[in-house]
Image (cartoon, rainbow, N blue to C red):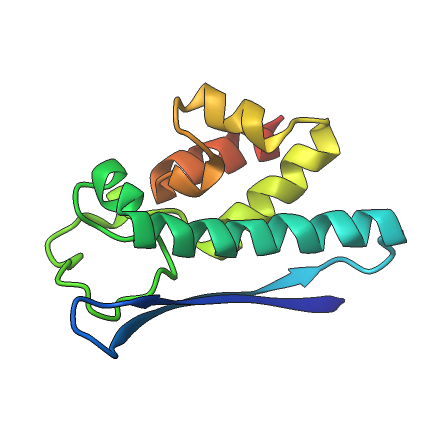
Length: 143
């Protein structure tokens, strides 16, 4: 088994002169043995895209609009006033592990991340809730 650790950081100017805010996200996923070089490269690219898109969404405020003020899973909290307190567990964003497993199952079925996002009417799969992700995983595992 291989472990992949993808990280993305971005520093942006803050409101005051000579100050900045730092945004960072990282995720560690396990990859199955026996992947071809092309499959491995695809998995690396998809995982990095997930992390980068999470940071960019937090930076541009698109995450809060889609989640009622809750940041995406693994999204940085530096300078953020938002909180998940009181949020139901199933309404929370899908975890990176859930998304990774969902992508594995989708790949086995020839389904693209864009098709999954379209099914749940979200911009991309990083906007799935834990419940949506869990339901889709259960559906595919039962088939």
